[in-house]
Each structure stands twice: as C-alpha cells, then as structure tokens.
Image 1: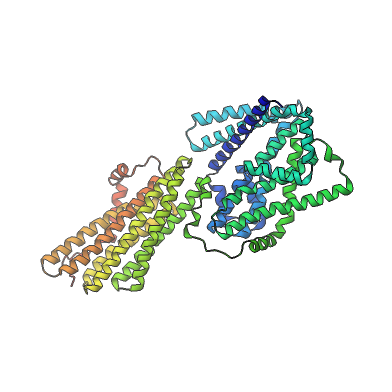
Image 2: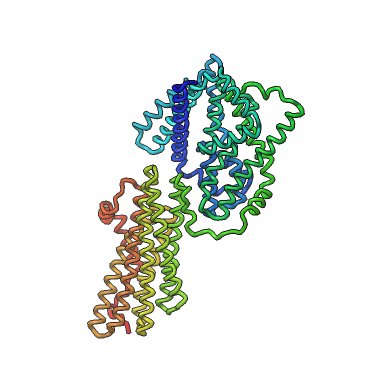
Length: 588
C-alpha cells in the first residue's frame, strides 16, 4: 500500500465520518426533539425501554448520542437509573442498523433488484435530490431531509473510497500477518476497543472493518474479537460526558460500560469454549460486510436477551461501585448534553419557564394575603421566591444563549428568542410581588387601614390582575393562542382601573379624607398591580409571536386593538371589573 493509497484511505475515512455526522444531525433536526421526548416518557417498562432505545438509535444513527442523552436524563432526574439500563441495551441493538446499510456495498448480481440496492447506483440520485432540497427548499423539514440524503451519499462515497484504497492489501503478506495477530481474542478485543474509543463511534469503526473486509483478508477469527472490542470502546463517549455530573449520571455511564464488558466476556467465553471443543471450520474463512452485520446484530440482541432480566443485579453492582446518592439541582435539566439535540433542550427550557410562571401565581396569592393581614412567614416566602426567580432567569438566560449558538431550525430559534423575553417578564413579575410585600410592611408599620369601600375597589383590581395572571400562565404552559389573545384586552381594562383608582384617590386627598401615608401605600399598591399586568401582556404577545412567524409585536398589536373582536373583549372585561359608581369611597 503506497502513500497515495494511504491518502485515499484517510480521505475516504474523513468522508465516511463527515457523512455520518451530517446524516445524524439531519435526522436529529427532523425528529425535532420528539424522539428524545418519547424516550423520556415511555421507559418505565424495561422491554419498552429496550425497544425505544433501539428505535431512537436506529433513527439518529448513533448509540453514543443515545447513551449520552440517557446520561443527561439521569443527571437531570428525568429518568431513573433502572430505566436507563434497558434503554442503553436497546441502543446497542439500534446501532447495528448502520452495519446493515453499509453491507449493501457487498451486494452481488446483475438482476434489476440487485442493481437497485447497490449503493453505487442509487447514492448519486440521493445526493442530487439532497442538494436540490438543500438549495431550493424553504422549510426546515425539507432542508433536514436534504442533509440526511447528502450525508448518506457522502458516507457511502467514503465507504467506497476506503474499500478501493485497501483493495490492494489482499495480496500483502505484511497485512495478512498483522491480521493473524488480531485473531488472538484478547489482542483483537483491545484493538477494537482502542480504535472505537479514538473515533468515538462504534458504527464508524464497524464500517471501517467492513471496508477492510473487501480485501478478503479479514477472517471470522479476526473480526469477532474486534467487534467485541468495538462495543466496549464506544463507552468512552458516555464516560467522558458523565464528568462533573451527579452520582446517578455517573452510575448510568458505568452501567453502560459494565453491560458491554459483561456481554463481551460472556460471549467470548461461551463462543471460544465451544470453538475449542467443536473447532468451527468457518473461523478461518474470509468474512464480508454482510456477515459482519449479522454477527454485530446477533451479539447485541443475544446479550440484551441474557442481561435484561439481570438489570436489577447490574444496578446493584453499579451502586456498589459508586456509593451514596446526591440531590440534583433544580437546573439539572439544563444539561449540556441536551445542546446536541436543540429541540429537546428547548422543551426543557419551556418546562422551567412554566415553573417560573407558577411561581408568579403562588407569590401573587401570598402577597394579597400579606397585604390584607401581614405575615412574616408569607413575607419570607415571597422574598425567597423572588430570589429563586432571579436564579431561574440567570440559569435559563445563560443556557438559552448557549442554545441559540447551536445550529437551530427556524422554529427552535424563534422559541429561544421568545423564551428569553418571557423569563425576563416572569422575573419582573416576582419583583412586583415583592413590592407588594414592601407595601404590606409599610401598611403595618404606619398602621394604615383602608375603608370598606376602598377595599372593595382594590379587590376589583386585584381580581382582574389575578385573572390576567391565570390567563397568561394557562396560555404559556399550553401554548394557547386563543387565551393569549384575551390578555391584552384585560390589560387595557386594568390600566383604566389603575387610572380610575388613582383619580379617586387624588380626589380623597384633595377633600382631606385620606392622609399622605395612606396615599403612598395606596398608590404603591395599585402601581405594582398594574405593572404585573403589563408583563403578562408582554408574555401573551410573545406566545402569539411564537405561533405566527409573520407576527411582530409592536406593529401588529396596534392593528389588533382596532378589530371588533378586541373591542368586544374589552367591553366584556370592563363590565366584569366595573368600579362602584360613587367616587367618594374613603380610605381612613
């Protein structure tokens, strides 16, 4: 093998790995985080976990990506350690799909069907379709399909290039002698593990083995231990990803390693013991890409069947390896691993942002109780919630900025932008609920009391703000545009309520029925209430924008206010929250 063939081999390997990466990214984007969400929710049954792990891995073409995702799930508390074991076993089965695709390169025959399934015949067509979609399509879905097709085409071209580059090795005594060394089970296993650990992809390393099999020099005796080692080597990605994670996440990564090691030891022990007794004749026959795919699949399916019933034992061994648990952080769901599947990461951010929204509601309820009758317990809880909301905004903000730097589809980029606005509004709302607590303190310290009529007026505004918070939270958590469209009309009514209450208050001041201290408390109270409604309107506008890519908040809102439907909602809310006719309500 001369230097130019070596260059061709390296170039083919580069194309192969790049094509696999492009195809995998396209498949992840096409899934839009749905596969990961399904994986998160439907893994309570071990067998279902295996099936889902296999399907997800077969679709995204990477057992390493699935395993890393599972480590992230365990780290964030989304998935239990027990559930993760079945999923990782399924991922081992799913990753064999790549070997079956690559085995098509060895199809022989001149029939129409044989020619159709030969990669050299259909790959150029896929590449052409892919580049047309990538250049002409406008939707992200079609562009993702284009990336998948181009990635697959590049992968197959790389496979062919590697096969052509090493074809001359079939007559090389040096290459033959080296492969004889690898037929030693222990040495072959080590070589397979190291190669896979270096390129961090068992699918890629199996592909390289399939390419080398085209020389006719690879025997079953050489391929089998290398395949066993490749299964172990792929664990390196998960082991690296668990650095700095919780105890359970580390356990999940180690469980994956133990599964691979136990599987390899059991298989090789049984197989080579049988070979010693029966002396399998095929061991020294040449192996092709098709038979490599068969062995790869048979091994992973068999090991899953044997080890799945023992998953509880594996869990106990892992827990003995890493002792003591650790409480997970509230923000553990903002795991760096999820950045590799942006759509799913966006959903995790939506979940935390929804938590923020409910924090606002709880804090607002406590604040009203505190204003009515001061409570140190409520005061402390509201202030703690305000600090917690600050932490939420900081953690989410940093993560969303990092998420925005990923290669996002348009819909996810839009969601990230809206979330960055929404979390700021939720945090501001908790600031104003804290202001209500300061008002409650001042009311207590200055011994300020409102008359019955004044309390009735304020109650009307409080109820209106309570409803706008409920509407906003429901609209945000359910992504409900219909509810979001009701928020702005109610916010207009609350603005008018604030102005009417302020005017009545000024009149009471002028007539001497309200002291300066009472006036300050009253003004601070209604101002904080109105500010909360302002931020609710901002969130609602963001929800509407999230569901309409042509929507622009400031330009469209002014047009909406002139529509009959908007005016009707304003009238309805005005009637619901109408102040008493008399303007002589007193605060004493």
